[in-house]
Image (cartoon, rainbow, N blue to C red):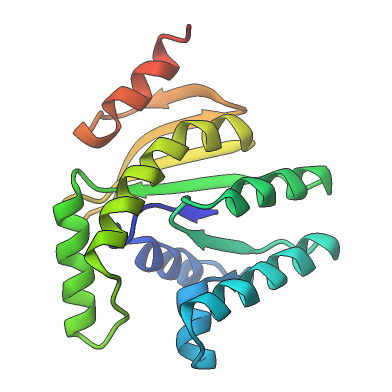
Length: 183
């Protein structure tokens, strides 16, 4: 899973990683599906969900891009694990929602897809709220900060345990403190 708020740099990250790997896993990205199939975002989401379910049922590995704001993200993690998958979460975050809004506007100005500002604001908060639970559910999580458009690794988790952290950007300080000082 490659997750993070709109405008954080998920698609760029995924593209760069996929270019470096000879064995490319299929990518399930509703935004790409909407563009390629020329369908609405809702229809693209349904198509992405069907593709994910199909990949899990056939035990085919894949990459899922998401804002980590839907119940389906957690259902997918559970279904994948029940079917023998090892689930890795790569989370890309930015210091504030204004960075995310600006990047989506820049992307749209260059011909990319737009996202309404109120959706970006809502998803930014919800994505961060869901991050800790996602870390606890996946086998491995790697967190990156992309506030300055240079991916910087923040932390590594294995089975919900903080293994290492390199820096603590403002957007994830509270989340990291819960893993450093578990209750």
